[in-house]
Image 1: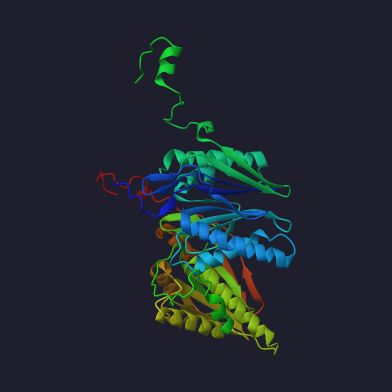
Image 2 (image 1 turned 90 degrees about the vertical axis):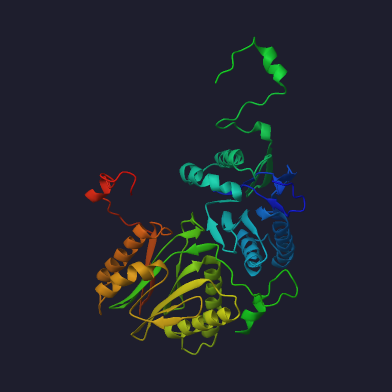
Length: 233
Length: 244
């Protein structure tokens, strides 16, 4: 496959949003690709809309950025007029409005998540086409194909904050293992009544899955730690 | 309604010509099946939102009330259905604001929807849905359908999508005037079960809605039992290995 550096930047991506008892956890990988080249290996796909609402972006990098920029702009004005923080529902519906009205041109799937005093932690999925759907958890991006089964089995209602974050990190990491368009680090954002916490899990700190090996600095280190070992088939 | 037009151009490109798109749907709902019974209309739909071949969303409500006297069921693109619900919301609101004691009946709502669907089709910009509109007003039962190209009709029983092929024959055979509520529900469930067996995009989680003069009731989500106990199912390829 040729290196097409003028191909539009697309975030292959794995994005996840999960509610827990008290708030939400948003998670994403960090790979942005231009064709087969990884244009940015440490992108931040979890973007702030307001103090209490964030959005996970997938699909076309440009489209998702412009939508989130417009929504941030509108929400800023809305917050001033309203005199209090915008609700997650309003934020999600603004995203829907733009996605739906411009469905011909946009190619972006988004997950809006946040916390407000009326409804607590909420997650809204807004896939291609501009459908809005409130869910206890949402997955999106190309990597999500590999997670439907995982979540069917591993998801449960009423998790704690730490359980929810561990689930998200495990899931993104599993998707990265199998989806070529996802990779890099796992970023999480936890939003609750107390505020927002950003976490960062670099590639080398993620668990290893089937057929993955422990990373080393060099072969020489392996050879020097023990006497020559027979290779196992 | 003028405000509809005003609200429509939320485009990011300033001057966008009325888009000439005959798109494709992304998140779609499967069949809707409905019939008239003694006291009104019964309507059934599963709660699936498919994304191509993936059964992506499993809690999509595809049956919604529209005002006091109508019930709307939709198959096809869910985002377009959500937009139609907004249009209807506005229609009903305006109707209520007249505060003249009159309210839009199912026939009027069906007519409105037909106009919307047909006019969008004429602009090569369809709302990708098949809609079922049922209701009762002043004792008169009404059940109609509109397709994405504006074809509309009313009948004693209507179906969308796969339902046309699988459920219609059952309804033609077994529907009759003055069905009781129980018989109506059983008949709908018979149709939904067949759809579950034979429609790839059906899921086993459905709702049945009832509309009568008293109002709308939408059941909580539930699942149907299926039967697999035919002896022929156990070893179907004995005697013809490799076949199915």
